[in-house]
Image (cartoon, rainbow, N blue to C red; front, side):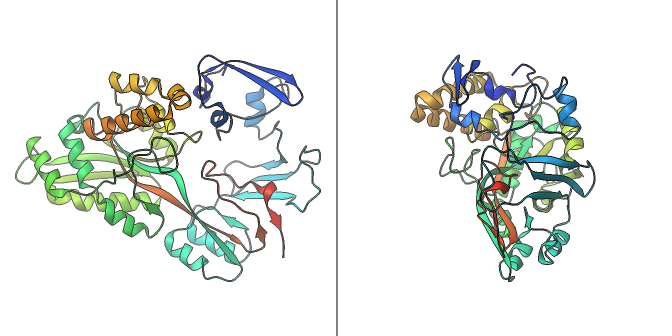
Length: 399
């Protein structure tokens, strides 16, 4: 809250925090917000010792911890395959009277085939994501369990509304219509489900009946009105996406194929996230492909971060500047608490404004998490609010 860094905005409504006693904390708010959701955020909502070191930033960057959880950092080796090792913290307030894992090792293995082989050989206990082919194989492998769960993670295709050829809303709508939504869902083979608006199902703000469909004839008409298409000016668009992400690559390949007959060339570049993001903050592309999931389980995360006006842009990588939309979004956190029906109506209005009126983005699918782990691991539960977390303390080793 003091630094204003990262996802600190989630605490904007808080005017003070007071520890009443060892088990009571009082939050005083400037306006109503869903504080239970805010406090449960996977980002910027941590309990830690503020006096662990004079410079806490340097302390944490060195791979140290000062939290209240069951495990403590035993080794931190940035850039190495075996990057992080945790060990049980003997004085954990929850106790260690039941069987628990005492050591947790995190290995960075970008190649899904290699990760699967390591799991099959028992070299690792858990793989956070497998492609559909490997997931199907895991499902029939003795000694391996699988988990398939709808997520709060959406694939997003953000269009540059500020500069270049996509500044023309007709071009944005044409590219939006050219995406093969249904074909992508089939090709993902269970790893994705159709999106409904911007916010995924299960959260306030999800809009039923908004499943997008490809319309190549409509795309051709829009391009013609903008002066592009067969027999007219050629159009070249620069697109960036995540290096090593097979699903995003599938999207890009199919979009290239759909646009080619329309005299549109897609100059696609796979990049590491940091490089892609830094370029995106400078407006260096026409189309930016990424995933979004909420900092806390609320639809506002998509709109407040990705589509609210921002100068300089952070995650608003469509560079949308829309004062009417901003005014609509600014009241949503409070409205979520005071009038959920009105909040849902506001979300539906905002969804229509972003996707239809401004055509600032396309949302082709919602990710389905397909994970695998050893049969001896008991008690695993996939919580979509914490997509990158395994609550190891809740697991029970057996076998």
